[in-house]
Image (cartoon, rainbow, N blue to C red; front, side):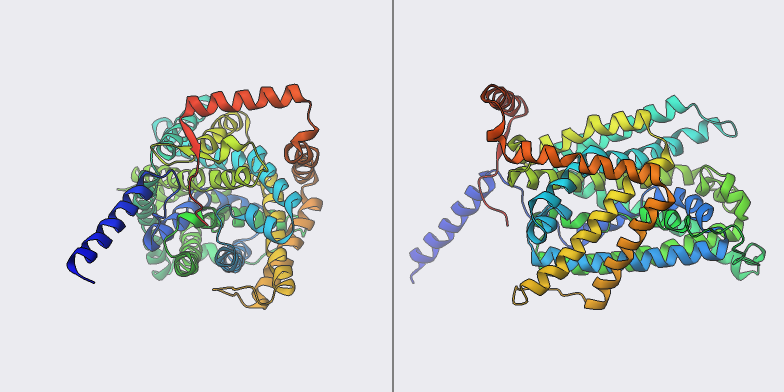
Amino acid sequence: MGIDGVQSKEEGDEVKEKKEDKVIHLRRTIGLLPAISFIIGTVVGSGIFIAPKGVLINSGSVGLSLVVWALCGVLSTFGALCYAELGTTFTKSGGHYTYLLETLGPLPAFLRLWAEFLFIRPAVASYVSLAFGRYVVEPFFSPCAPPTALIKLVSILGVTFVVAINCWSVTLASRTQVTLTFIKMFALVLIIVPGIMALARGQTENFQNGFEIDTLTLDKLPLAFYSGLYAYGGWFYLNFVTEEVINPNRNIPLAIIFSMVTVTVCYVLVNVAYYTMMTAEELLVSDAVAVTFANRALHGLASVIPVLVAVSCLGALNGGFFGAPRMLFVGAREGHWPVLFSMIHIRRNTPLPAVLLLYPLVVVMVARGEIFQLINFASFSRWLFIAMATMGMLIHRYRFPLHPRPFKVPLAIAVTFTVVCFFIVGLSLYSDPWNTGGSCALTLSGVPVYYLTVHRSRLPTRWRKLFNYCSKQLQILLEVAQQEVQTY
């Protein structure tokens, strides 16, 4: 080929790249470091600074609570490895929804979508944002209790900030997540180091008789695991954005393994540090465990800890609002949700309608929610569907043994994780029948909605015309359109 031929080929490639840049679609912009930051930044949120109280209340002793923290880390890592296989087997975004759709069928997938946006995502986001509000406001009123209304107002402002970032730019949201992750890891190190130093000096009195289990009852143990697993929650969020990960077959497993090992080690060490400086009774009466710890161990830096914890909560909020709307986006693309939510902004290339749908739901729940009830209420459905997704993975392995699986988790890990999840979910119905029963009922309320949503032809013609008119007007108002290229 001559020089002219080479030049024409290069010019053709440049034209092609320019055309792809102008085409409306979600782009692959998440490399290995942003992927790791995305997982760690979403996992390390408010949980490690609040959940120790819930774990200790329900486990009954210092020693057993540390065992629960370690086992929750191992169990979460097992689940993350299962999702690494699912994420490389099915290359669509959407996380739980996509895997249930591909392995168990459309109804379970729709119910997961329904539960996620009716109460799971608003409850989790509300929990994190309320923690953010508490840690921002509390230092200004210490030692008095801060006004509840002010905490909720600051929480709503935090949610608004995160929603604005995720509507504005995917790149900005990704860079924000990387920055906040480094800050929150610094916060964990700031807690771990003085705690371990005190332990090394022989300050071990709070660990004596650490396994007294007089107050332990079997029905409360699942609630201890729920609190611990909530603090580890977020290991599955990278799977929500598979179509935006660069080289997912390599980066998804690597990011998941590195992130979960790091988080598990840090969480156990943080709890050891807490118990080194505080008795179990002191931890239980504290509404902000990290602040109480800082007042004991970090006299000069005590005022910094609430700021770092608030930043950590903001990072977890950002990760949730970055990942969860992609599930709704994919569900709408598959015809299980109004088509408007499968559209992206024509200039900013963000899934604007899906992000905005979450906002009013979270605001309402922040205004009404009670923090520990929110965990138990959301956890039942969340863990039921995670167990169903990994069960679906095992069924898919059996039915399609020759299907390409770039990453394959050992069978023993997949079976162990699935069985333990179903056991915890089943036992929680006995432990907290009110919240878990309500969660189950709300999930099943999606069954009639499924048949109305998927089989729209059964709706009256007038309703369909009104719905289509409203969708078109919203599309014009939001300046959104469907993707013009397939990204999976």
